Image 1: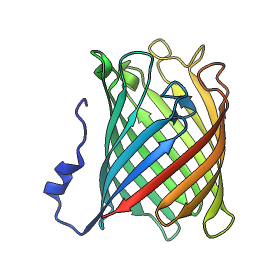
Image 2 (image 1 turned 45 degrees about the horizontal axis):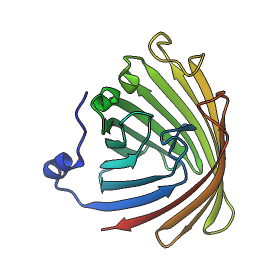
Image 3 (image 1 turned 90 degrees about the horizontal axis):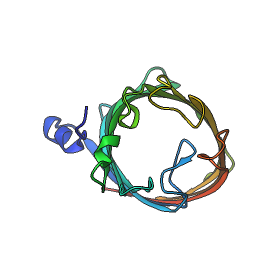
Image 4 (image 1 turned 45 degrees about the vertical axis):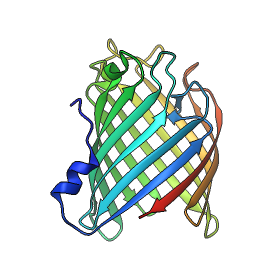
Length: 223
């Protein structure tokens, strides 16, 4: 699957009551499971999202990146379905398409990924699987567990840990192995469409995932 999943396709196929929003984010470093995608430099990111009352949703997302070559833009699309399984358990399933732009070989990195996310109160258990990770032909999976502790009406403290693993070490390795751990602890503050966060992130990688203090400011606009 090499073509971007565009939410506009869904707009033309489903005539249901829906909500649209856009979020603009400035982050001190674009971390993807603890590994910088911008050479430890800041990133400006933006998304546009559509969500129907049925639970169906779609969106697009973009960020600057720096892989040490001419690739400078990541542009992604996603489509999924969110449903309440019980009064306390929710599930979000979908597929995302990652695309990269700027250099002659940037699109060689393109890949698709399926995901399933389970929510119970303030706890989330998420799974992702790619069958052609970064265009290498390697199978790759990520499992993540997070929990948020509300401190006040607007302030919360979140912790999380995720485990990334390659299923084809001959095609893709993380440094000298096929897996690694990433963890984080973050304070989050939300007010009138603004979200601010400050946290600590680290991995057990030797060079690719250094310990980082990550600052994020985002603003969501509802249409």
